[in-house]
Image 1 (spheres, helix red, strand yellow):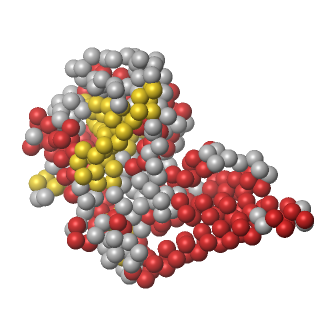
Image 2 (image 1 turned 180 degrees about the vertical axis):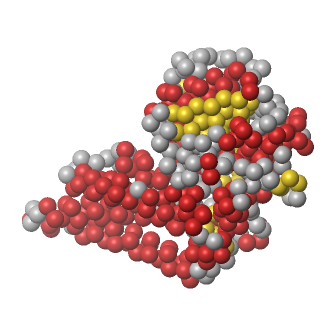
Image 3 (image 1 turned 135 degrees about the vertical axis):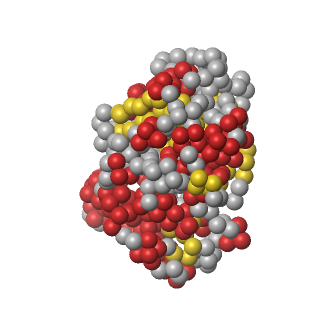
Length: 425
């Protein structure tokens, strides 16, 4: 599979489906069919619109779309995105609220690099902006990074996080979501040992595979079933001629998307069937719930082959974080060195990707941390996405996280976390 031909073939299939959708939409919308008022033409046009949009989204990076936030003065303040640190494989960005005084809470959101862009955390950012200065790791699409930029594996990822945390300084609260949870834990431990003055105040870990064997899921079982050789043969391809990263070995985002969809095929099929029916009846909208979700869900990015393979081998197969044997650049990281950073674990009761127990294992590894600086919460009824977006996050988890920040910070509270309205648009 390590060929540019297979990558371009996959891209050609996507492009063809987008073209078929556009063709069906254009043909079925031709005015002459108004003389033959048959519902088939409305269904064909609706199918074409939905298909064209869906396959086009797969190669488009979504916009953050956060334009203003309401301040304490009840005025709309513009939000500008500024890049603080720019590296080949990822940047540290800041959501600067124009005209607002610096907030006592400063939060670094560590976004996943698991096939989707960092904009997957858009609603998380919007919910935190009224009460915090928000910084985000914005990972880049590997297909757009020239081979000359070199490699990027799990150790490089950890090194990026260490640099980002050092850049922001110690008065920062780090929140890691899903995939980066174990690496963020290791990066924090590395800072605790090598540069204690740069440690963050708190570390919030949301639904990540610190110990995949603590509660096996379909995701962890897949990693167990295949050998690394099989995985490399089946999943890794070279970026095609169309992109700046031509020739780079990657795990294509389209393959990751296919695996995500296959886990809940019935639910996705029903969602698209309902959307086509609504579009045929003229009852859909440009920014309805379906489009808002799938515009983000279908937008995927490639990961470097070395990052994907090292994550599977070292996090899932060898369980280096769970066994506290992870190393960066030859230096073994000891998670027990974390003695001052308060650690908060958030899990979802119905999380089918990182099941309850996988993330909780982090607290057991923090042997040097007093119990007073440890906290955990399992959100009843919440799935994987519900623990960082949606109603469960807004109403239950977010207030807990903000209160945890305040309880472990020298900065005074600006306003009550539980009563603050989320007003970012």
